[in-house]
Length: 314
Image (tube, rainbow, N blue to C red; front, side, top):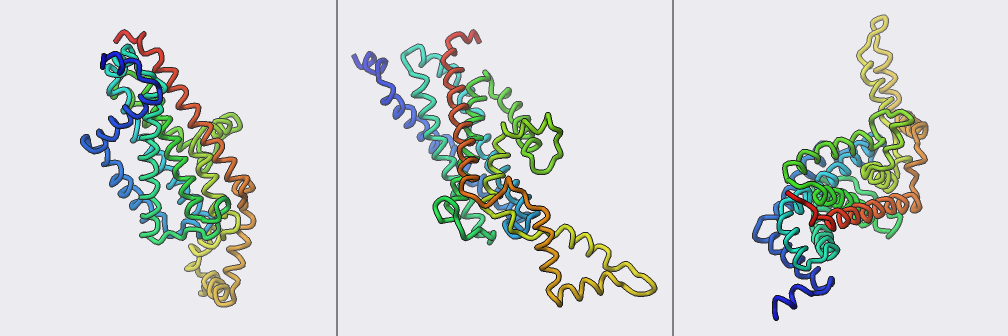
């Protein structure tokens, strides 16, 4: 009688059954280790690029790209093996009455818990390392919360992509082999640093990194920041002598004393503005929308793949 009841449990009840299993794994199988790992990675990145993040255009671009990479790495690592490592169990329980949609929903809730924790840890590390977080929010009027939502969506979207891969492959070694290629694709086609032709540029819209980077640059008001590349290039010539004098060094000294330096930096930034990174709520919401769409697609593909698990002959 009890076996019959368990077999015919509804989809909603099964979600909590598998969710309880996942949280037991979090405690007893050391899944909690993703949190200190997230802290270490965030600390290293903030130490290297945090000083100029949301201060200059170059620092904002590099820093937001690094933050997006942190989130994508965290998301991939969270779930790349979670399904394929227990594929025989999933197959057996599916034949015994398990609903795949309930199983994936439980994973989605559990992974959201991990991603929220990693996001909070990343923000705490940013605060500790004194990253210059913007003060004006576009959506909630609390900039830290807005940025936190963006970091969560990037992490969770990457998590769902990895969950999809874990549902598609049969072995953990295959999943871990695929993960570096997915990460490289996200980095190369982010649209931030690598020049892409017209054909290759179309792939940027399919990447998590592009929409995450765009949202973070918009929230950091990229277009209002000064650009220091031109000034730094001139600074490299300050020891150049001409007729026994150093005109570049003298110019830089006078520019700093007169305030011309700030004008040059602001002018350089104005010439490098990008409408894609406009300080706009619509811009941020659009990026969030793409990330949410990707999350839905990845989760749906994971469900579809596992619905055919009974055909797996291995």
